[in-house]
Length: 545
Image (cartoon, rainbow, N blue to C red; front, top):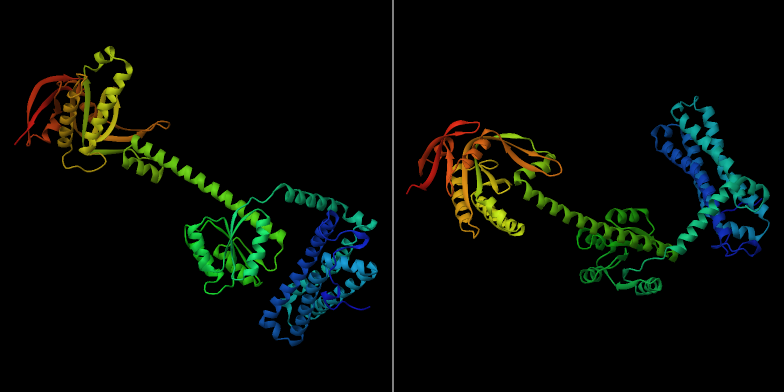
């Protein structure tokens, strides 16, 4: 029986017996899928044999026994020939050609014979050295030899299976592979529907190639698919074009004069303006190192010339779809960032800057005690009668304008607004940032607040009370955050305001002590203060010269 020395003995043809197309018909696709599955099952143990043999040959201990080393080399060579035979002969085109050329059973027998000829050395040498390993002190290689023998026998069993898989019309084979055929038919049908139901979305494509014929052929193909196609003869032209025009995908040749495809790819992926553009490398170079390098540098894919037009269309479609999703993702991220900034801005309106910073860092604000804080309370006089006599819109508008003036004044003197309670205003100085004299700042702020209130056309006036001492600060609430102050200092400042004088600033004795050397004031008559008893109060009159 004559062996098949190489894959060229069986030339590819376009049709199988009986007139059935061996190209893209459903039955042919099912046969190809089944053959690919079986062939992969056979190649897996063959590759394992090659890997184990290479491992043994790389071990210095194997060289210590020349006969063993030479036999493993022969075994490895036979396994390599078997892999080449499987990859070269067990393809749909070549098997269809063999079926068309003559007696299929004879062809099957010949192919089986050639594969077993390559497989026998693997099994024979591994079995022989398993028996002799102990005599030659090769015990360390026993697990590998057992694996070689087992994989060889596994291949032996699979060879008949893979040959029968191509004869799916026979009754015997059909019964064996019927469940798998049904699964493959469903898969092929699904893939076919996908190709019909999912047209490629047109895009703006740039072909970069120094060969004009290559560019022309590729441009015609892509334009026939509905894409808008541009051309560049070298890398510099490509970069200049991309700087001027938007582009969805670049088809980039690897080998070009002046600036090759690698350099263009690096420049594209290192520039934020071009980084999101998809890049498919196209080249006649079929080295895995080139493929790996391009993928590492950021290319979406690497296609070899001559490329399959259907495959190219699918890859371009996938790249364009990925880019569309990426564009949507970027838009969503921008929208999220806008909302985040709005939320951040709103948070800064509600809470002090330092509190917001701590919340961002730790997702919590730790309550703490602050020493030496001046607390200011202000309350509008005659506000309630005004509410009774004016419409709500006017009341709120006038109060809003006044509170905005108070807030600007507080900001001017480094005073932190805490909250408004109706027509009352609470603020503190020396709380979150150090101030030389918090009470002095509050007095200056209070004077401008009184003047601003009296200047309004509403006829309102203002009472201001200030106390100085320690406070506790913390954030309350979950749905509506509020940074608030607690303690006796807060209560006393509120009492200074409620027991104060219209149009004037009243200070507690603690607060007055902070400004008495630079201010003139009037000591008010001692008065009982709720919760405090009799307290000294000082009315601020003016600053000393």
